[in-house]
Length: 270
Image 1 (cartoon, one colour):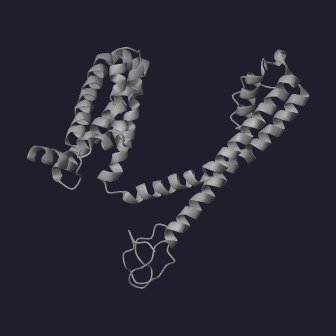
Image 2: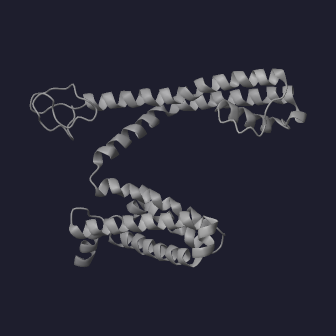
Image 3: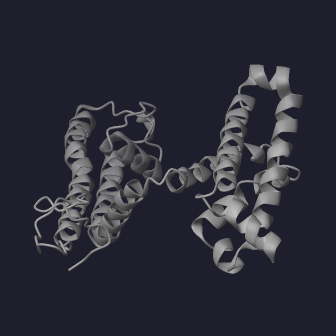
């Protein structure tokens, strides 16, 4: 039990020297492993240093595998950890290497290890960044109905545009089917414009011009929805703070101290 408690302090703790050292080593391992995977995808480096990359890949995979099962062993609630966000990321950070023994090139999916760097916020006590992230997630959650309605309208629009362009341009101009025409409509409406398909007739080009102009307005809609929701969430959170010393209530979203008397506000609500 003493050993398990000590390991728990090292692996999950960030206040002790050994805990901080473990986290720093873990971050270095993650950075080196991701960097080696990226370099391995470059043909020149793959040919010259393939053996080194393979050794590094298996070294880090075994290390992360041991770390994952160690976390399960010393965790007070192993099931909760296994199904948590970090637990799932920790698991899939080494599975692609074993999967590559069956399916070729799946080891490149190991770049997902970069998600493990999110722990740096906890290690460096950057909780304010996490709170800002929570505001964005809450805003997205509250905007989901509006965004779903918007996406439904856009899907209907591209289907109609695709069908119209199929009729106008036809197979001779590259619009060989309605699905392919819908693909063109999506590319044009989002102002990406790959250029692999383009209208040749004057009517088709005129319609394409209108779609491009509409595309700029459509892109702004979800941005405006989420932005306004973020503002509303931030205002609600700021108004939820009340100074325990002077009962002042008008604070900025990221305020930690009362602007009137200097009292600490973090963790307080109306």
